[in-house]
Image (cartoon, rainbow, N blue to C red):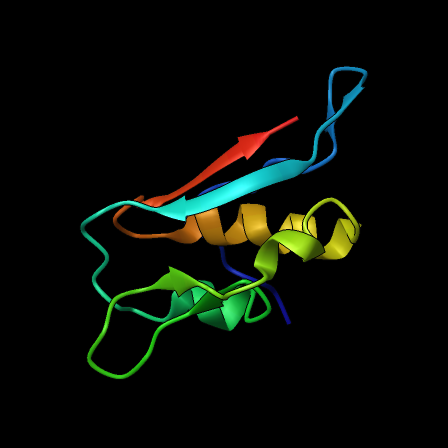
Length: 90
């Protein structure tokens, strides 16, 4: 079965010859509560019923440790239909 993606997912770790890691995640105004980010990276994002997306308390301790999670964070950023998920990288 093939996976369909809206936008290309960039590598979370290699840009040129430098390793990249997500250091900070935040959500700007405008979330439409589509739950896509939570479906992709539930360790980081939560969309409570009737609310907009926010990052889970304590998510910072997970950043920079798991390459697969980092890739899913980038996938959530790239998949957000209103582009409100923002990240800082090293």
